[in-house]
Length: 474
Ligand code: UDP
Image 1 (cartoon, rainbow, N blue to C red):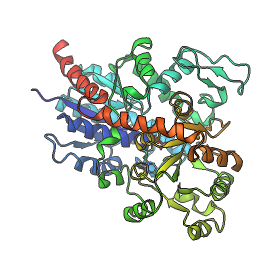
Image 2 (spheres, rainbow, N blue to C red):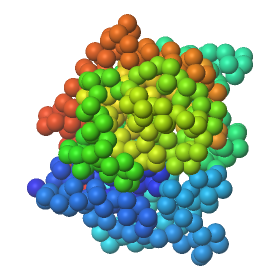
Image 3 (cartoon, rainbow, N blue to C red):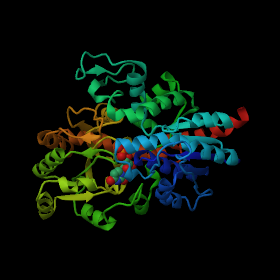
Image 4 (cartoon, protein in one colour):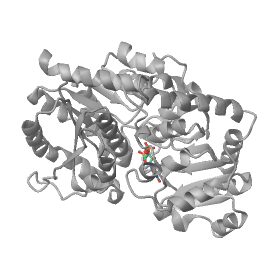
């Protein structure tokens, strides 16, 4: 059997880098030779993923390339995702990405892989692939539902509504999904400006690419896998949930970066709580929460009296209401993690029954894999589509209420009463039990998809066969 060599080019943000690293591990577990090409700071974050492949036929290789901003007349750039905390720095980074093309192509010329799997933020890799006569596969970091719904609302049709808050039905998709214009990315807003150019280039490059690879599984969104392939007519492979490659505690503990809580402390706390009794609250790696919103969440959590784990960013620490931490510690009701949480470890724990999430795609999938019921609280990016999948299609969660797309990635404006209501619904029996049953069913399907003979397992093999035969067809 000839070996297939797949080259991965991840984007620097955690929500893109983590699943691509998991994907490389999964490919390695299928006997594929894999190389991740990346910049120094991301490379540092991927060493744990590489260690996971130590016993496979081909261990993941890492090839480091550097930005060449000086030569391109651009300012120096940081590739550390923790340092990119303003639109200005993000803009500098996005402008610098094309300077990776030259060193990337030098590696491709030398190693002659079978294909390139590159993040959507590297549209120029479609050009590279054409130059070397190999396929370029796009990784968007989201699921089929969002790919289909955004294709219909942003690329094809302008939503038909008289105002920003009047609901419209997303056209042409299998379910009747209502959204408002204020829930869609505002392409003209300041906050989107930094993305607009690369977003347009990315859409154009995707249309010319060989296909897309999706971190999802068929049983989760079958109508949308088919819609994407048959109606939008793109080649697509589903190989997820890729996070499943993290099998033991160590693997689940350190994805992206080291967690700021000791694993034993976290597990001990979880173990002390009854099964399904804890709600986990996290807004991912980018969203910021305003001071007033932190106050509303804190007071709601105190009033709900449910067990909870709440992740807050380091820079939000001083914003939580005075005395809150001491009160919840005294009641042993809550655990606050400041910084980076071991999210997979938490969601996989049987004490966790609910998840209040910003609906980043990785969080949604990790919630599905944990079999938890979700409070969908989208803030930006394609999170409003993901939230609709959770609440209206899969029916494993409730919406936090009428929130709008925020160009500054700021979570704000939801009152305590709405939070209390949503928490009570997902943790309670009335509607919660039916959602829990569906969530548990999906958890089993998610696991089965990646096992030998499952839908994602087979699609990964089909993908490998397809790209292997590309050269012989060419
Ligand atoms: N994550 C984590 N600990 C945290 C915050 C995030 O492990 O404290 C991980 C999470 O498990 C997920 C990724 O970071 O894999 C975040 O991706 P997602 O798509 O959910 O959201 P984003 O951060 O891109 O908005």
